[in-house]
Image (cartoon, rainbow, N blue to C red):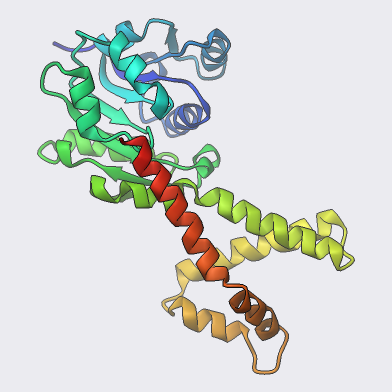
Length: 270
């Protein structure tokens, strides 16, 4: 039976808002075919005022009447939501919940033949520069479904198709990665101020340098090791900074941080 809404979204936090913003800007779905639910009435009112989508405080209604159901609640709140949806049989689910496996979603809802796609978006989605890892293997036999899911998330940035077993690693790299980048840039700014620059001067230099470096990586076919050495003249200034990174095990710190993040993502699945 044809559903009343193309997309239903349960949960209206920052990421769901970013998704809505991308959808509206790219005209992937008409607003009248979208419905959003949340326990916070203020967030629903904001969604209605900002995006002119349908809103409801009834999660069951949203689940029953949407062709695609996007779960955007916190992972630790999923079991409570599943209890609330008991007896409802959504056929197509898209989850952005970190660490919650497809099997958990299917077993917790426990009715009908459910197809689940999982996506790990990140904060730059809110500005249209997101990076998303998406597992759509449940939908691989239907191009319309996979096209819809990729177009949905492609409206917010770049999409990489991965298998579910890699999503914890995706969480550790791109899902949480913006925080690592922010720390690095913030540290560069602090260092610049310490060396006599104003905050605004240091911020301009740091942000544009990181942005430009990323652009160069995307355009260049050279390996990163070669790009690093291209900046490091023998006996010059850069090599002295790189030596400090190496002496303090900078790469090891990054690896340990990602490992801790991935570990936590796996714990959320248990």
